[in-house]
Image (cartoon, rainbow, N blue to C red; front, side, top):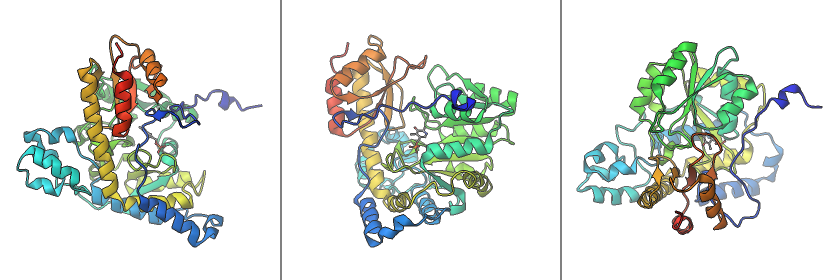
Length: 414
Ligand SMILES: *Cc1c(COP(=O)(O)O)cnc(C)c1O
């Protein structure tokens, strides 16, 4: 009954979503904090002011939301929470702390205290975007997964391969299969960072596009903007390259400033992680207007209205709440660093994370056994069967109370 192409699909497998709510869920990189009250109020007000709003089609261009996202990016510089690790070291502090209050910098510990209170985070000159992001540089969709699907359809052909790191977001191979795009998977470097030289060699060989997440998943390792600039400068100029910034708000460096230099750069971002919208579904692209027009043409050939009225309403309210979200991102980043230290003290190998999760393993314990013991204690984490990462657990950072429960659950794993 089904078309042949359906037999050839290889669908994405998300982290378990149990319907009984008894588990502590640290397996899908969801945000443990809810959206701010302003988002809920905006939704309630919208509905009670006129239920008829649900009977009407939404704005197909999502203009008000794209305005709000552009303003949000200009306000934050594209990152809610800048690297905390650097904040602890006097020498790096000046360069990496973004808050106005940090200009005092009497001592680094004082600076960190101020940093936590200073919200919204005002980007330093170094971190500000050197141009104004305008709404014609934004494209919105029903989650960044859908946005990525439009990006694959818009820019990658079946006559040449797409280059990705071997271990990265596992939806990229799914879309490559869906659209019949050949894929070259380049192994990571021994330290689990991207092997940019090998990726560039593959891109040069095929005159091909690159796609990668920065910070990467499931490793959590990020590249600096300067490193991405050098990477893109050495990549084919006549191809579109995609950077997925799903996790950038937890301590990465955004590549949005690079749009001034690269007309062939597409940056994909999501509300799901740092803006607590995994259930609401909202993702977007930041790119030059020419590329936005191409993706819009594809969208209008598939679904004119991917962003519904409620998502528009909630998204606009979220974009006006940068201070609240910066505070959440800061709490998660602090909890991550404390948890990574705990794991290391207990003999785990932990990759350095700039995200809201850590990838970790313990030599004496298989990933499967660790996963099962943690699950018996009522906590879900993520593990992978993919060779190369099968001994690791990917653990989403939750609230302090959730992480205390997890510490207890893994404390005696030998
Ligand atoms: C979670 C995630 C996404 C998808 O986010 P949605 O907006 O929820 O579809 C995209 N890319 C990466 C790397 C992710 O981890």
